[in-house]
Length: 220
Image 1 (cartoon, rainbow, N blue to C red):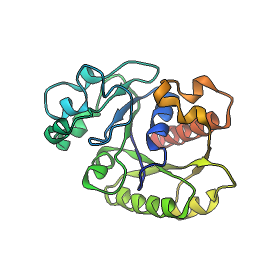
Image 2: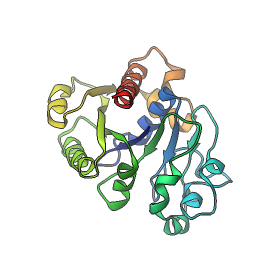
Image 3: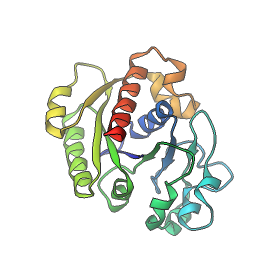
Image 4: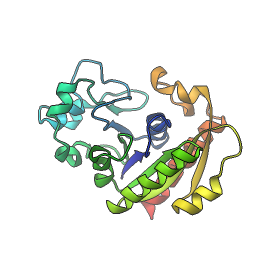
């Protein structure tokens, strides 16, 4: 199953949750943000998603094994210009993984819609603020237009009581509040998913809840 992690606005922790949910699913995570890659491996030597989309490498050749297997994206403008997003369906169809989590670009541009177009379902990420939730609604509409189902919504970096029930009604999907936790925020840089560094934490439980929503969506 291919799951796109999307959000209508940048800066809501989308990449962090993509990385950690992939860990909970024992999945491959693909960094599909061609212009602003965030996941590990994009600066290391070896092929990356830019190369795969340009036809210079196979997806399997670009995978970086680790605590979470990552298909990273390059960090150069030249690489982004040569990438052909029409190859994305083949790029994310990597053998050996039951689930592939695709970290989508932020916003509602054409490149943001490409992962949604190839995904079976999506996770929407928003911070519990009015502007972020408005953008999540717009992202939900884009996913609906592209026939991409909604597995769950993550309200990320929650400090106070979140409007989870209202969001669930508005977006029509189970909504999980992910508490602010520095271990979650540092997980990409440290390459240590929170489910491994703090398995009993509220953040780890929230990540597992989101992974469970993906599993149920796959079964359904």
